Image 1 (tube, rainbow, N blue to C red):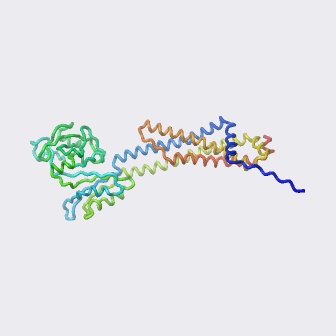
Image 2: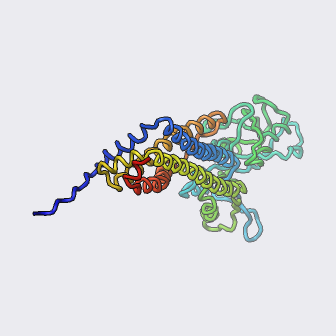
Image 3: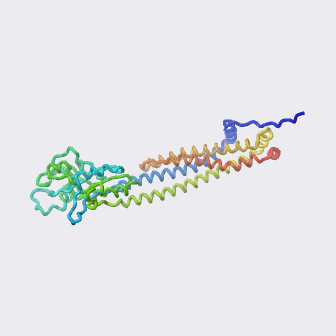
Length: 397
């Protein structure tokens, strides 16, 4: 007579595990909602802090960029003999060929002088410099007009835009009047506000590049080149600017050093990154503690259910898998709600402060993934404790 075969427990398919785990959550909806809400608040707080801080950093970066963190200027130096050097006329086009360079513009100093009228003595020019300017100069250096319009490529006539200081010295506060410039009348078409990035333009009268060549004998050689590059490549571009502008004599070229604001921006980024990582870790720990607390209480309250399932043939592994699935579902539910609430809070606050709304992708995906991982870890002990319960011991409760 053959020995009786030992029954083999049925295997649970993945969808069965999910259904069993979800059923365990549905039996106590209020507790699960409150537990998931606790996780959601922790994740939402973490994501809101990260998002608001990232939005604030984006606003700070935008402000620092406006202060010229990526602006380099090139000017002629002196020859080996000590005489003033000149930049080649094609130097602006050569700088534009550098890969990380985003935009290039230039001004050229003219020998002409500007006066309020033709009767002013030659020596009383108010120290106002006359510069030939590329049409994109004002946009490049962040200048704005207090009145009038800027120079355009088509404005080849005798027109001029005055810097804030130059307009004050000439006694002009609105476009319309004419000034005596280079022995001819020029109409004032615009007046600039003070320019923090290029204060040398405040005391200048700007004439169109082509108009200066046609009317004022300008030879096309720039005296100042303004270069904007990517923030990460400022030092690299600065290192090659002199040789690019004047390959024959790079020692005759002066290049400005990167703005101190660039160093400030990098220090700020490092500080905020460390703070965000710390806040995220704290929020995840709080969420994990909430999941573990909920699952431990669930095991204690459901001993009779566990004993009945074990008496009906459920294995320890199946019980362990059920409670681990419940923990994962609870963490996913709370994490998803937290991501949604945190995103809405970030967008609303950024809109209120007129900041760019920035929510890092790593915070969205990483927060949810980390919540699920923490939920799995937090559910391991309660799941193992439930699986260790003997059917008779569990049924007595």
